Image (cartoon, rainbow, N blue to C red):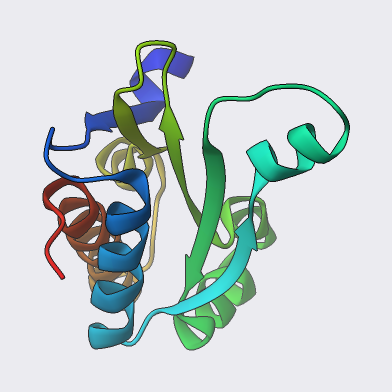
Length: 137
């Protein structure tokens, strides 16, 4: 179940993890999604004296859509904001990991007026991920 709820995408070979993050941030801005959190986990691990592969968690959100979803059902607060992890594996390959938005949409029963908003969030997150995978600055 957990494997199906998460999607991972390999970053193009000629795109660095930093370029992927820059591309995702730019795409999010273009689509009016805000970067509301940036957690440089590998930097934290290194500050604690251990080596770490690159790992950074970005969180994006449209606050107005989030408000509507949580007002409908408080359980949606557990999915907020939308998280996208950028990391390097043991071989130095870059990856982007996020929730399987299609699976989430199929698993919830939404009011008719909320369905387009949820689809918009899905489409936006996948567009942000695509920008990172391909380094679309």
